[in-house]
Length: 577
Image 1: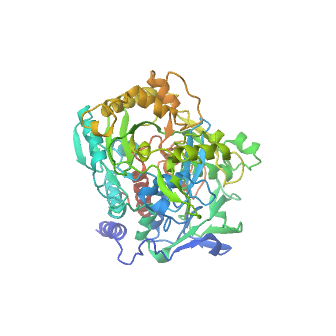
Image 2: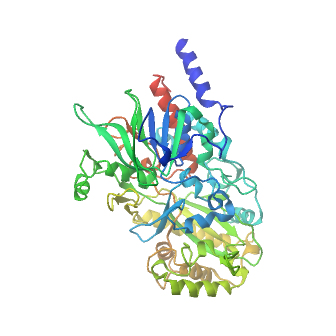
């Protein structure tokens, strides 16, 4: 009876909303790293205030003293992050303070990693959808606690999106070509066509994982921004295996600080730095392939050749469809979940080019993702972006009619994927991106899934439901050639792109920012996400995934942060699930 009462107490304590929580963005516990003492002590130190790190910190703070270290700044007050209309601007911002840090994989695909409180949920297209029951079972998670954790997240960040004309036409086109049944609005992962959730409210304002800090106990949490962790510290003397006990981090002025775990065998450091950051920091701290670490002069604490292995990125391919009719600005709202392993989605905009004026009042356009300077869909390839080339492109694009930038992208992302690569350190500076290879389409099944997805998109474009949003005189081949001409990556083009869909998939591959792996379960961490071979260290983020969950991983990453926060409390109190 006592056990049952204590379990009930814990459930009530951890699952209710707290009336004394603070509301975003007015968190008193969020400070800059420069304000931190030189030395401090906590029950838990979480590295990475991202999509999983924020809900994890909020949950653990309800009973413990938690430090959350985020290398980037705040998402609040930054319209490029907070408003749907400026979605592309952050991805195109290459400044050192941008919430997005660009990297280019060894495959030649332009990509980005988050550098902001809230992580990738501050950069993405806002689509919110759960993992499938099969994914949950395969991960070994408790289904009841998973569902409770999803609901905990959804109360703050997710809602049903308003469906307008272009997205409705995409939905109806999917159904017309046989991606059935229609499942209506749902967060669940189901075969057929559905309307998923969004983290944008009706005014287009983003609600990221940072908003989940509203659940925190303010007295139990310290969040430090612009606090870059350089390495994890371990005790080794007199131990059977290394024990994590602290971290070294630097503030925005370069000053070093140390944070240590308080005395207590159950206190832990938790890495939630993402699929690039977590394996990178393990290696910088001496955990990884011995030869690779030694080549950079890093003292090897634990030889584990699996750190950085199993890197995957779900390839995205799209067809751009100019529209003769006005279209709404929309990001991902509708998804067609096929049985052959491709997810069909779309985004539209009537202002892919936004009128702006410089400080002297000279009018022009901000081209967002089409920006000649930095845009992922620029007409100027990255290696050719000289000042002269950019100036010529801007002048030419300013002369175009607004209708040239009106339309939408219908895209497909493959499930999985099956193809994998690896990550290595470029140097010992944690501010620099590591080197990563994803090996897109190395597995032939991935390529066939892409081909199936592109064929489905072609049929949607030709459907009666979508006819209002395409020019009748533009053939599919014309659309393929036009889209294929965008320098979306650094790969060479082939003359047969519009004739061979296999070649089109390879040549026009982009990221949808769902990369994962590098610290996978059974290779780097155990089933409870404890790092193998050391004590008091876990990894809780997308680097532990073998495959990307659902059609968008952000819901599951936020759920996982909450889920593991509750589970860790179960463990500390000796309560079985």
